Length: 242
Image 1 (tube, rainbow, N blue to C red):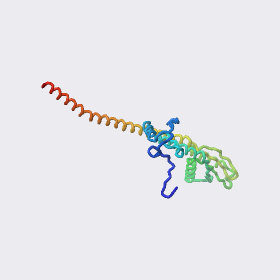
Image 2: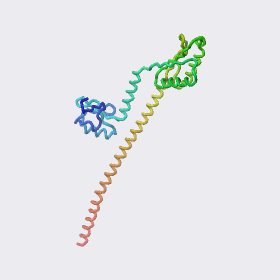
Image 3: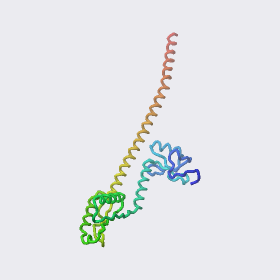
Image 4: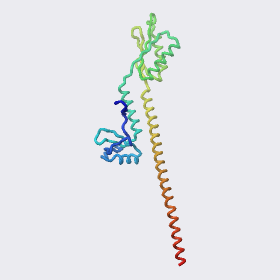
């Protein structure tokens, strides 16, 4: 970026496209050909679409007729999907003592819930001390209690098992994909409603402009018609006098 110059990653749309000609692509991907930019803008307005410059470095630049709001929404969805595919879930670890009071249990359960909601797996470890190692059943019951309390957010990926002095269980997040799809549907419905509202507003403005033009035309015609009638009447009276 040069000093004093802001470079935007956003494509130029509609009146921002200042080149005299563009190679136009229709809304369904059809090749229209090289036409004047002004003509392409008129086609976009007639179709209630936007003229978007998709290849600015081409000679001439390539522009496409699309719904820019829908285009931006789809780009965000693609970027989010790409980030999700690239990211790998971390494994968080929470440690419990076998003799844990209810308050500490609730606090640690809150941490587990937060990790699962964040899309991370959770390794839960019960640390046994002294004679507790000979009675691991209490640790298994504690882990089962935890799994039951957070079953809305995660499932047991690895059942409780004893490893040396510890009893370990692994929880995996669930419901993230369903939540994401629901959010996408909600945003898609919202975007569609906004687009329909814009189209309705454009149509109403167009109809209002047409009605105003008709009214103005009628207003200009009315005085002329009245004047013609008066001239006809005066001519008729003059003939009667003869």
